[in-house]
Length: 274
Image (cartoon, rainbow, N blue to C red; front, top):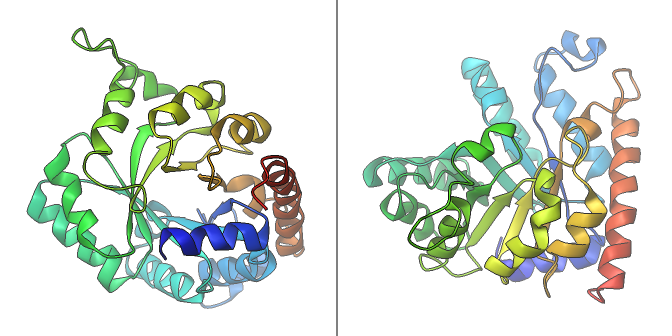
């Protein structure tokens, strides 16, 4: 999916909601555990219930890898089931020396056909560039994440530039790719910094995880993080997919997704993006 197609879906659905299908078999409703592939069945019903307001779905590969070959099969079936008009993200956080990254890129872009993959920038340009060689595929580079340990390295200041490490990453990476291929992960718990972070990368999209269970403020993120194309994919995982543990789980997920979409529509309208 290219940038214009993504923007078109945001306007059509009046939403910039990304739903994280971080499906833990221990947390899905008990009645689903009787079917052949409980994880896929759970995902299928979530997708059916939310695709009218979800612009994107993010699959954290750890939740599937942990189940071995069966998990990879659940991931494959889920990915194939997601509608073509939804942006798909492999939350895999890959990044290695160049030839290894090239193989990771082939795996996720050719074999699995995801639209985007999250990539760790620690090893530098040559570890990221192989992911940028695929047309209409995206790198979502880790920048300022929402976990408590993010301060350990991301906030270290350079004595040369007086910039923090995450700022250096964002500025440097924009020399590697245009904004139609490069996004950044910016945690929702960094909402208060969002205006400054937007100034660092005015034209790039941000994937913003952490709304919902992690307490990210959607209003602050939206007010301070939008650009002229919206520029946001705000992810919610647990708050949506585990909104209910009963047989009504899909309906409860839809209700929570629709609640977030209404907030998003208001911000899109306020910014005159609809």
